[in-house]
Image (cartoon, rainbow, N blue to C red; front, top):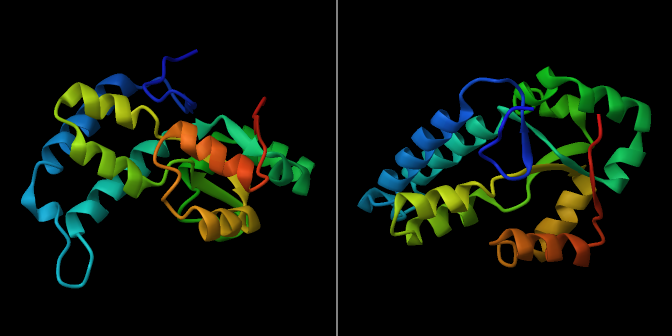
Length: 177
């Protein structure tokens, strides 16, 4: 088993993800020190969008370790096939419409992770925050419910995110492929 820099994610290959994780953390630590992270007049930060994309791309080098019970039971046979195919995760974003109603969700929203990184004073603090990066597989209807009640407020930490999922009736189970 390859060591993972992300606490709840399983690497898709044996590349040196520890080194790459440090590079990602270094980039984000330095980027979050930048004044350009502030919102522009239209309410968006292009630097923040870039950081989100870096995290999204890095996360796709891992397979989720959890799925909601409803997502698994939606079509158990199809789920097993999807869950056992490493290429599925590498191609999830460009082909996500093919997987509906399954939805790959960040348990802690990326914006919340970035906001936490902005508050970090050391590189090690950023590593600790980003080690919580985790995707889970849920149904689109579960994502909609979660979004209504806890868009990002209430899911800023793994503990709060777990509670939010429970309060929405989303039971996560480990993926055993």
